[in-house]
Length: 267
Image (cartoon, rainbow, N blue to C red; front, side, top):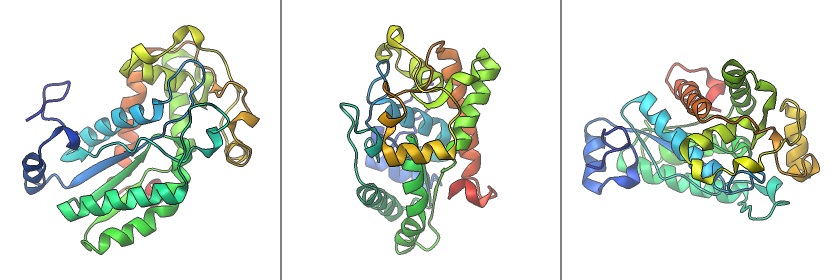
């Protein structure tokens, strides 16, 4: 069987053969994590693939924390209309994203997965996923009444966690703004350092991300609040902190998917 970076059996479904996936399900691996990312601008210092690649990296860590879980192929394009003022961004409608998620979930349910965990790694996917979960649940119940679908949808809580970790590690929590900031830059510096343009890092719109700002961004577009596409400040990015951010986030997300989690944690 294919092995991951730590030498253990790979958790990525797409790295396995069909008999290996079938055997995993037969042995009780019936939980699957679906990272839901995006292809969009992340300032002058980070590539368009940030949300997709971080989704994959985070999905692996969430599956590892859950135990007996696999990671489905990352959905690499999401709801990014508010980023369309910046070149290269590709966006799909909430209806298109829901159709993709529905087909993912139904396919996985048909193979025997009973716990399907949707993991958004792009802020614009949080609300659409929260809205679609009841309809996804109904779709998988037509395959198996015991099947469950959930999504992690606490965007502001996630950004708050980033701020806490960055403050504890670097004393730079104020540079966490929620997009292409010191947190996302540090995570990318950890997983794909060759794609980070460190010398191009510059501050964007400063201040904490709150619901009123989120609403304004979705209504007016990100360019209405930041000319360079950054919320926060990526300067001071640190690969070691990036690893801690991914690990801390994975623990919080995995906990939200456990049976005794608070209901609003998974929509």
